[in-house]
Image (cartoon, helix red, strand yellow):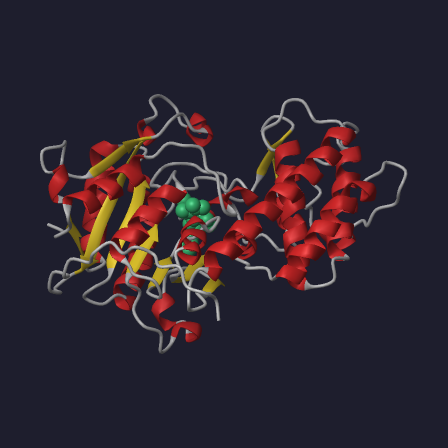
Length: 413
Ligand SMILES: C[S@@+](CC[C@H](N)C(=O)[O-])C[C@H]1O[C@@H](n2cnc3c(N)ncnc32)[C@H](O)[C@@H]1O
């Protein structure tokens, strides 16, 4: 049992069960598939860490954990096998100074002028050759393709890699809105308007993040590492680092198909365009991002990958590290048990919240409102239940209760 005051447990449970739409800070920069709620990440960070502690997310996706950690004055490390996740998490955690904010503001005001059907655009021939323009040459889509190229050209003229990344992310978000899962494509005028709206909205998020960070006497740092979480403890970049106080993560769910690396254009045709917009290259097929093909019997590849990833977390952890995961299953009847066995094999022991002892199996469950990727499954949608699992490194003494801290407001150095 975790020894935590009842009010702290209640805040963690409320954060995990939150179903409000995602908003605030830089969270809306991109709709990364299977994001978890910022309130969940925030509640876990506030419950188990203090400012300047280190938080790790070893399947960082769109970077929700990192944004919340940064805004709460914690140092954070995010790891993901996807270069698109690396891009999104990096842009969302970039803290811009005032000069940069002014330059973004001026750019947002002139961005619409860059998009015009009669103006020229950059054709990214190397990406075209590699198939990143797939499904975009159709007569109904060439105008949008050209608008994306023009907006990217404008972002590339922003003059610094940090600003260019921000500009590219504005294009990424707008192009996702225009193409992904859409039956009717927007007009060029609507695309242009949305570009400006997104740029301004994202600028406001960037301002919020920078104001939050300025509230701490130390400068919280964030690192995003593009690699598999398996073997992370041997990464040169992590040598000599303190153990994380908290790991908050959500690995790919067993048997649940999520399209992390593609947009669905023109019905269900899968387009790799987001990587081109981010100036990244795609890793491989969908099983690369979902930890193995769900067609393998007993999801062996999946559980092997989860074991490898969480064994590395255990190797990085110390006796005070708490590991909080949000997980769902395509078939709870056997996968939850198998998952918990896999955590044991990774040398992690489960711990529980005393206040949930009378409830169901004593674990923190939440119901997920209908989600797009479940439509891929046949029959029932058992994945609409998610569970928050809490672990510690096996064979270590129970942690001392950590008081939830009020975040002091300090002047920035
Ligand atoms: C459920 S998503 C995480 C979403 C994240 N919590 C958010 O709020 O955006 C799971 C992520 O795990 C990543 N992933 C898959 N295999 C991995 C591995 N071996 N190591 C690290 N990350 C991996 C996927 O690329 C994907 O971004």
